[in-house]
Length: 450
Image 1 (cartoon, rainbow, N blue to C red):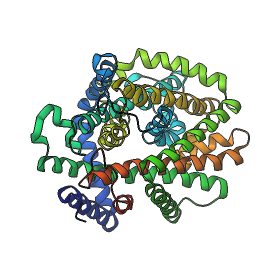
Image 2: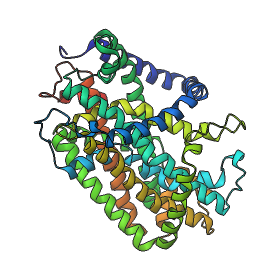
Image 3: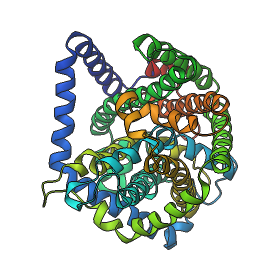
């Protein structure tokens, strides 16, 4: 207890307990407050999220090819703490990779059946299919990784090269100097900590839905509150085991397993899925994505009164920006000994390419089945987005074998993501964290996971 940062830890805990209590006492009021706050932010600051996304990507590209790219994180003599491959799979598996398991198959169906009204695209048309695939590239590849990479680099440089505290406010030190540290920094950390832990709960909920949908499909186990509770307990237990080994063992081990499982599932769909179609569509959609990148990245719908962007693109930009601080603390922490241009390559370009490949395969398969009468839109309306991927596997050979394997991937992915985020949150709540002593106590990690 004597190592807790009181101004960071206690306000966040109290607010979270209050939110949980309100959720149980008056769920409708809780939902109204959260939904209202989310809508107000996107309505008033959507333009800023769009500009930030594009500018951040431009800054990352500039840094990578500038003289600054040769600066080494930790100083000239700093040595990397892991192999490049281990570094890459950790960066991949602890960021948006967990999200692509859920949305790669489901999101395209939304865009095919309900494209933006202002674009004049007919639902379920070839134009809608092309729009859906190029939009997936926009939402899940280079932009979100840029929004993670830049603050991660800022934190790594401040923590290792400038020897500033393990605090979110340290990222602002180059701009504002000493005044961002101390009590002001505690307030910044406390506000971010509350929102990030709430975001982790939402992310875990998405993972639970995906796992419950698979159990329902394979074993006929109803996806209800009891099943969700069982899955949450299993995830927490797995996390505790991983967290007890430290970041260099647990997360690294899980990430390697996770990445290899990704390769297996990719190979399976390539062998048994509509391979020619998905790569043809992916190539065409890539051209559409590059052609309309700035237009769609900055699309707010204000001129036409179209709300689509607020439901999708602006929501995603806000979501990635909300996750960026805590992700930055973790990714920055494991980048010791690397040159900045290496950092941009491993944390931006290579993961974006991997996610682009994943989306091409799974989103492309989803689009192919929808456009050829398989009826994924009906699955979406009846089973929800968590049912789409299992409907896709049911259309392929060996579905009874591959679906349990996919459930394993989902489970490991969410444990890995929770482990990395909670490790950073626990360290942010603790005093005495330094480049030489980076681990918070196991009890602190377990507390935030619970």
